[in-house]
Length: 167
Image (tube, rainbow, N blue to C red; front, side, top):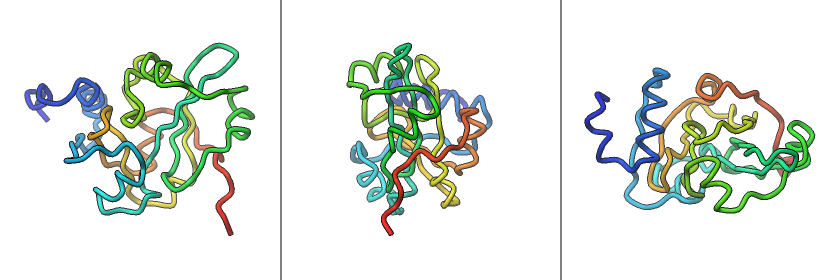
């Protein structure tokens, strides 16, 4: 990307594209024809397994009102007790909190380019896949990456933050 093509993208996607470009990430954001507000919708449009979607879930840390970002595999549910054990007591984040802290609306929260840097945890379950996809700052925007790219892009630790998979 040279930059000129960014101006036609939504503002949130432009922010994500600039961060990806600055960090040397090889894949620019793509705009899907339909919204991908859920992991299943994104997986269906991309023709991949729902587990390959890197969901960005925002919680509110109660002690200081900081956003906690958990990047998890689309086929897993976050275990809030595990997250709390790592970062301190958290609670649900409403749409206003998410927009204020990240700069993104729910359904388009990217793992990068947040308005205010969140405390971030990466779900180890993402490492089951060679290729994953994450939201790119808009419900229609996504970008391709490898789980290990999340380490470089966010500087966040990998953790066990999900409920046990059914046997």
